[in-house]
Image (cartoon, rainbow, N blue to C red):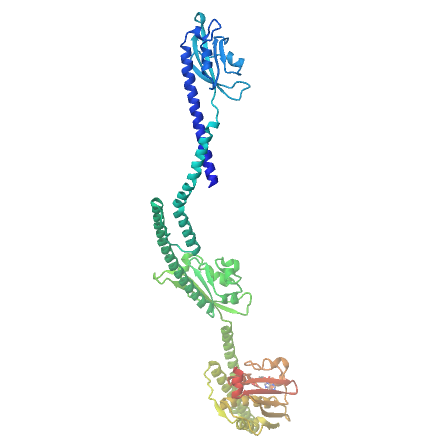
Length: 601
Ligand code: ADP
């Protein structure tokens, strides 16, 4: 406040000085002009007296005591001083005297050498002696700029007034700007609260109008912001909905068991699921929106996809399935098919295509297996039929009358019919099993009785020959839930093999043991045994050892696969242990109910 007061005082004093200086200069000018006019109108003799009498100039100097008077001169046309008078102590510099003046009345500002103050000179032409032209010149010091002692009381009074008025102004100013400060505080508060509200202040008229308009503006902005927020919320909701729908579709496509690619109208790949990476070895990122040739190593795939490269081609609906072997894994076969994506709104309009790739290696293998199976079967059926035809012809011919030939022929025909019957029944059972139509009729069976019955039946059959048989069963065996007729087929096949692949004098053993959760049945013989490389393959259909001894004993390679299928259908296991030349042991494990639960866990 003191500083403000001082500033005000200095400004006022400065203004006063300037005003005072201007007034004093004006006064001097008026005085100088009127004096020069009056003196110029006086007779020459009075200005430049002949005698030593005091001229008008002397009178003038005397009358100008205590003023800014500097000098009065009368000079001729050449600048020679004709009469002069000066303020005490002032010496007119010669350079000023000799200066040429115009022949007209005027004034000029001079800076006399050796003096701080400037001079204002007033001059006018006069008629001198002998009608010659002379000049009258009056010089005055220009007014001093600054305070004088006389002015001090005035300035003191002024300062006092200013010091008294400044607090008043300050209070009034504060009162006027108080609403602005309030508004500032309220706006800061609203900003820190993160709100957008009306500023409540009481202000004078102009400021009140301004605040009212400011509040109206805030209301307008609030309305606009709420509208924008509503729009943003709606936008976010629809974005979320779209994202949710897109993700749902992608999840469905990812969950498909087959590999899929989505092509747009121009044939560009816009989506590919993870299965594609498994099949083709390329990730979705590798192929999306990229030309097929840059990532595809399979000519069949690139050729297939190139059909959809143009917008026109994508509208063509090719429903054929392309099958090909993978170049990076030739043993795998894939099937590829495209499905057009029709627009739900415009009939006939196609958005693109859905390309589905499926691994059909197993199906191809199964198909190949079926073909081989039929070929094998035809071969296996043909051989005994051929033998039967030969012997029936023999019986019909003249040799048929020979008794021993007839007996031999009947024995061969009987054996072949048995083999044929075994083949047909094995084949039928296998076919049923593969078709899934062999349903088990499981019942709780006294397994000991079943095993004894199968063993007795086969050990007394004609096949038994000169072999030793041994049955080793515990006194009690828990009842298990099996289909006894079907299980009998498997047991029969194993026991028949044990007899078939044994040498005369050999031994066939049939035993069973029981643990807490399973029953283990062993069919053991001391026959040919099975080579290690054959042990892995004897459960394949139609597989027979190349061993000559084995080949001599006839067979079709269906007995073991059927037995294994049957045991596995009962959730059991069939395995083999053998030392070639010493015999073979086939082990069946049938789980009891507790064991089955254990296995499931
Ligand atoms: P098949 O006996 O009609 O040839 P199988 O499927 O029953 O057909 O047997 C497959 C092959 O397993 C036989 O060809 C034989 O090589 C071998 N094999 C099966 N059982 C025995 C066994 N007890 N001793 C030696 N080899 C056997």
